[in-house]
Length: 135
Image (cartoon, rainbow, N blue to C red; front, side, top):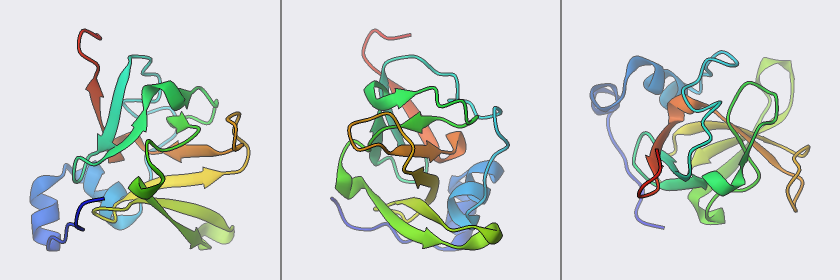
């Protein structure tokens, strides 16, 4: 893991679109079934939209029916950090990019993978890099 990225709020606003800023810096969420990558089936790598850190591989992406891109695991356990989130009258586990501390989404214990986890991630927090030759 490389060094943490620390930018001023003005620098983040300049770097990110309004929706990316809302999700990554203000811990917002996009509406279900509206995100750019929710239905993406192409092979490739999902990077943090804030800093470019590799976060999730297409091989771990699946259709959870939740309306957000879902993954069974990050590409590296050091790529994300988890925090207790007691907002909105519920207790969840928030997922942030370990490098820039951008809010990505939440992880739930109801996934199909070997660890039974579902990383429910906002498309606005991601940037997709297709594999060479993938459309």
